[in-house]
Every structure is written in structure tokens, then in C-alpha cells.
Image (cartoon, rainbow, N blue to C red; front, side):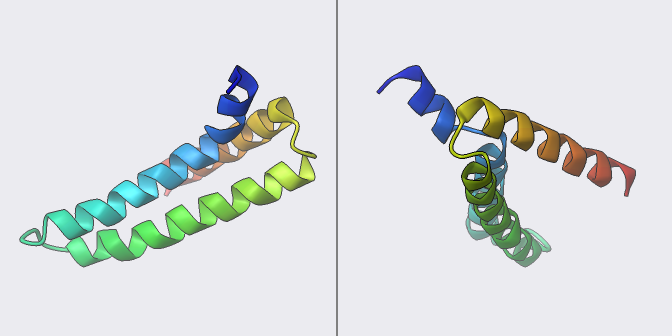
Length: 86
């Protein structure tokens, strides 16, 4: 496995989807905590949306790893900016 294959698998949106999966798992593990169901329900759209958007960007960029990284980095930075402003 060469380095371009690794960079095509690990992208900013895939890291965001990993954060959604961690939210889902954290909702399952800590059941005594208040609002753990919210972590489960908010983790699902984050994970599914990030994976879906990743595959859409990858197809639109014709699977060019550099273009995918640039587009996804801009999208994740924009989402982070919107999240911080809310």
C-alpha cells in the first residue's frame, strides 16, 4: 500500500465521520450519563453525512487525492466555522 492510497482513505471528512462514530459509541458505553441518547442520535447523521459527502466529493474530483483533500479541508473548515458561530 503506497502513501497515496493511505491519503485517499484518510481524509478530513473521513476523520469527521470517525468523530461521529465515536459519539455513537460513547452514547452506548456511558449509559448512566444524562443525554447519552442525544449523543447516539447526533452521531448517526454526522457519520453518515460525512461519509456520503466524502464519496460525493471523491467522485466529483475524479478520485484525484490532492483535489479531494483541498475540497474536503475547505468544507470541514467551513463547517467548523459555522459550528463555532452558532
